[in-house]
Image 1: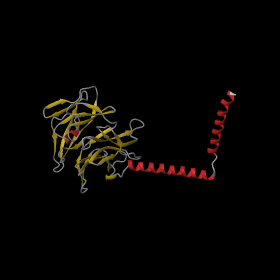
Image 2 (image 1 turned 135 degrees about the vertical axis):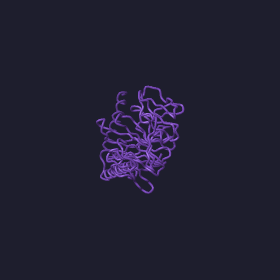
Image 3 (image 1 turned 60 degrees about the vertical axis):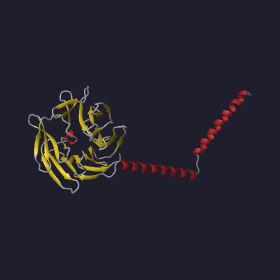
Image 4 (image 1 turned 135 degrees about the horizontal axis):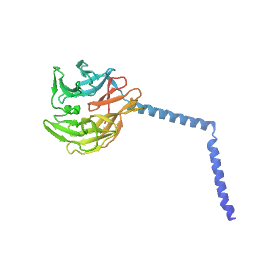
Length: 309
């Protein structure tokens, strides 16, 4: 008897399970229609959500320089300099009245120029036939050009737009140094090979890339910490947020996609600003507190868009 009472509850439980399973699979036409409506509504909601997410990630991008031009550098939200894709012409555009003028014709200007700290001139560099580098200052009003003396070859051209202190890389070991006048000091002393130095607007911090890593360096204490992943190209005026991009390549050479990133250098929070097909957004910079400009490396052209920090 004991064995009988042990087996019966198990059999009943199994039968009840099969009953409810069959009941769940056998639905009336009304139940089937209701389930389809729920499924279709869910699909519609999911699709709407994806569309809204895409629109949110790709807010209105306004073209401000036509295709064929890249490399925007902005000044006080009023002026922009940029080059043609060949990199042998430097152009100036007034963002207030739309006036455009050719500032300079030279070779290999790609990313080798920036505004000076007063925004009344441009600093650029050139190599001669012996591959010696010279930095030049160009007055945008008079168009006068003068060579700058005693500037190290691997000086971060962004330095000139911040203060009188310039930062450069030692040619032997790619370590970072600072210089003002005849005074030179070391910022880093380690085994890393640095490149692409970006100085913050207040001159207190620097972004330095090394291999696939990016660091923020305190220029007073020389302490550094690892930053968000990406190639960062400009600081926000709050000296905390950075704008940059992350590109993709199938073969390691040709870019197959590129999107813009925003990084908070304090919290290390990364926000993807764009996510597009057919655009290779790259080398962004801040126009003002809530607007960025960037190049499309696919077809050329300079665009602007509003962002939220």
